[in-house]
Length: 326
Image (tube, rainbow, N blue to C red; front, side, top):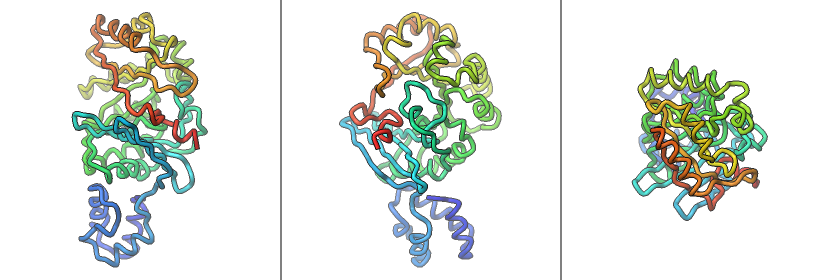
């Protein structure tokens, strides 16, 4: 819900200051509406139901995968599309991928969101309402800011949302912010944020020219400068940085490309997450054999790496795909 509107509405009524906390606590538990908030006076619940929408987002579509993944397409009150994904794993993890912007201005060529028109930054309440939508379905325990948008272009609202996540059931140690390397926001995160939030960096190519072709942000903030900031994060926090590397057939998946990546990464600082590509039209995903050969190069260089489980491929779960069809 719009927490600013909630606080203002309660203040206008002359309600005690703890009322906003009560409402938030109920929402964070996953209740479906004000009527379930039994420690609030009935008259107050009825007024809130009329004046403060229970969610700042409206659900437009929802797709369900055979593997248990759920993808939701929302609209903001001013009509901008927002996507979020719930991923269920056999070990009990319930992980949510949330958006920080509607669309994205950074135009990475492999990303469906990058092909969309950029709308605007999301407010912290709009980020939290993505989480609460799935919390009303079942408890959740992991979250990554890896949906639509670049989180460090909206760093204040992202961090405001992240600070409230433990009340929903997602600790800071199970929260990850993924960036393409937007250096001003990354530097602020390293300098100012002492919460044990994880950091992930999308690289997708160790060669600078290829990375610039895939990710134009590399021309503005070159990868060596971004890696130096990640190393500073490790030095201050003693927490490894996850490297996201999407595997594109014939583009960045050769053993030679793996060697380029291995040379860049200090094994003490970085751990690589190889991501089978969920095709969006411009590229094909790498074969299992190509991914295995790439990983073997990293293994020989002693760079820690894993291959991400593919989730939701049958429901167009890559960010921006569902919105692009509307």
